[in-house]
Length: 284
Ligand code: ADP
Image (cartoon, rainbow, N blue to C red; front, side):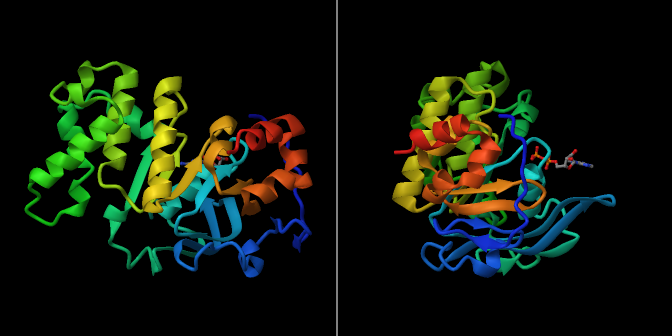
């Protein structure tokens, strides 16, 4: 997707309830669906060396939200995601998960993360499929980290969901690229995290695996009220299930409901009417 950003410098809430604001949190009374904040970012800025990459970012993501995070290449999406995990430190502001600032947050078993880059780095790992998927459960355990039969059942369920139960004893590096991707998706969902953060997870995935993956996300979202943040260039997929959309370009240009996104004239000017239509048309 190539976009030609047009920045809106007005701090306005338009009649459709769309927030086009440098700092939306101050006026986003309707953004949290049910009062439970899973991700809270306040007055956040980030610099690499002295170069400002993100500025004046504030938003809340509530329990059960499914947020499509979009923006041009180099707009700061991955940087924002890495800050949510505490992998980078903000130059200003705070990030909280489940009501706790990252400094105090320890419940990492509640959080699942998947990125194409992560998958690529594990291709030569000397472990079986079952072992790789079991690793997704380790963050839920205290020392000594032993696996029991409920864990085996969870691993088998995740493998079955991805239709790779028959591969469980195979070594990961013997598998095809598509099979490996299914294994890493199974690893991410095996402990059914409450917050799933997905950074371009389907960039190089075959269509069948992609469809299966999005169906599983939909089930987790509906059945477990899993909160999902999906960074993607795949405009067809993001429009299928997202309940909210965030458009980032060095700051939050837009954050609002999916419906508001589809009615937004500002978003039409950023995406072009065809891309916006593709996102909105497939929603259902
Ligand atoms: P996106 O995910 O939206 O493509 P990124 O968050 O990866 O954007 O990058 C945002 C900006 O930060 C870009 O200008 C990129 O060149 C820069 N950047 C990313 N990583 C680094 C880094 N490790 N050091 C310096 N600059 C970086």
